Structures are given as C-alpha cells and as structure tokens.
Image (cartoon, rainbow, N blue to C red; front, side, top):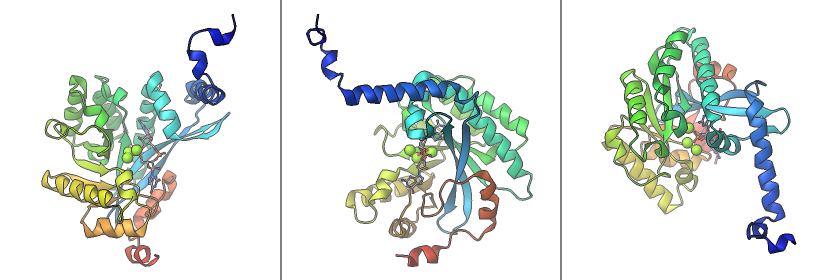
Length: 288
Ligand code: C2E
Ligand code: MG
Ligand code: MG
Ligand code: MG
C-alpha cells in the first residue's frame, strides 16, 4: 500500500507542518526538565504613573534559557506548559521566586512597589491556589498588598466556583486583580460585576496604532472612560512611541508600561530605577 492511498492525514503532512510539529515536540520535551535544571528566571518590567512619572509597580515576566534550545520566548512555551499541565509546577516556582524577591526588596525601608504575577486559567481553577499563595506570602513576611495577580478574560468566561473562590479570597487579603490584555478576550463584560477586579490593562494591540488608528484611539478612550466609571485603574500596555504616551497622558490614562518607559529588567536594577525621579516625560516627548 503506498502512503498516498492511505487516509487523508498524509495529505496535510507536508514538510513545514512536520518541522513545526517536531519543533513543538522538542520544546515540550525540554520543558519537562527545565525546572529541575534551574533554567527559569524572572525579569521585572516597571509600571509608571503617567501623571507623576513615578514607578509604582513591576510585572514579573518569566524567562527560559534552555540548555539545548537557547532562549525560548514565553509566547512559545507558556501555551505548551498550559496544555501539558506543566504550568502548575512552573507557576508555583514563579510565585515562590517572586515572594523571595519581594522579601529582599521589602527589607529596604519604605518599599512600596507592587509586583504583578501572571496566572494562567489552569492555575486559577485549582481550589488550593489562593491558600498556597497566601501561605507563601505569610512565609516571606511581606504585606499582602504588595502582590497583585494578572488574569485574562479567558479565566472568567465560564463562572467557575473555584476561580471565584480564589479571587474573592485573594481580594479579601488585599491582593488586587488586574485583567490582562483587556479587550481581546470574550466580549461579555458581566464578569466585571461578579469578580472583584481592581484594574484593566489595555491590550497592546489597541495602543499599537495610537494616535493615528481611529479604531485604536476610540477603543482606548472608551476603555479608559469605562474603567474610571467603574472605579477601576487603567494601565496601558506596550507603549513604544512618544506619540502613544502623549495620547494616553492627554486622555488621563493612570498608568503605563512599555519599552519606551522601560524594558523588562533583572531584579537588581529595579531599586535604582525606583530611586530616580521617574521617567523623564519631557525628554521622551521631545525625542520625536
Ligand atoms: P503579558 O502578561 O501581557 O505581558 C506583557 C508582554 O508584553 C511581555 O511579553 C512584555 O515583554 C511585552 N511588552 C512589554 N512592553 C512592550 C512593548 O512596548 N512592546 C512590545 N512589543 N512588547 C512589550 P513576554 O514577557 O514575552 O510575555 C508574554 C506573555 O507570556 C505575557 O503577556 C503573559 O501572558 C505570559 N507570561 C509571562 N510570564 C508568565 C508567567 O510567569 N506565568 C504565566 N502564566 N504567564 C506568563
Ligand atoms: Mg501580564
Ligand atoms: Mg498583557
Ligand atoms: Mg499578553
């Protein structure tokens, strides 16, 4: 029997497909041993108040330097970790590391910078998620309000009891909840009434075309206004150009994050940046 006469999958099994598949398979098999080989580390991207220019928080971003494949981006490995369940031990490692880092930073007097951690839907449905996080924070002896979590709309589409329990429990302990990539998930906003959300992070895809893209501008303005009307903070993600910053500042968006303001940085560089007066608004504006 020649391969062609077999079933249709052969038809799709072209070279590009098989190479892509082999690549994914390779990444996945490396990912399995990555924790044991200590190949993960975190970078922290500063978040600034757009009114004062002051750094007010950071977002912890996971990095993987694979001994075989080199640097692999989270956009590649996070979805694989989510599918395979490896996100559970990896996520625990992230939060342990963040708590350790917070403990170090907090030992300096007057530390008030918050750290936001990304949490996948598969983690948030674990009934023990909030307990584990709270006991980790207690162990590190840092104020609970210094930690925030970032979840996407995907975590909130179906009302899941465990998700709502975890979020309510965290919120009761002053851990604030950011909705990440806001506007790219599902269009139902009813969860905003159900879930104790503190802040909306406007997805980078809307910021991207500012100020020339009319749609981007309208959507951004609308999200800022809606967030304010609901008493939520607004954070613009992915600010790369001074025109974008000018637009956001002009529309009174409270906070911003993006390569223009700061790249994700190793933790050692954060305290010095915090000690500065903030990003130099005028320098950025005049650099056009
Ligand atoms: P996210 O949570 O929306 O994080 C923001 C992403 O935008 C980061 O990508 C950051 O490096 C990137 N970014 C920030 N400013 C700019 C900019 O001005 N321009 C552009 N083009 N990009 C910018 P990164 O670090 O590659 O992470 C990608 C995604 O992977 C994250 O998106 C998040 O969904 C996920 N992720 C990262 N770390 C973790 C983690 O510890 N746990 C989980 N579950 N997911 C994570
Ligand atoms: Mg995030
Ligand atoms: Mg985001
Ligand atoms: Mg994202």
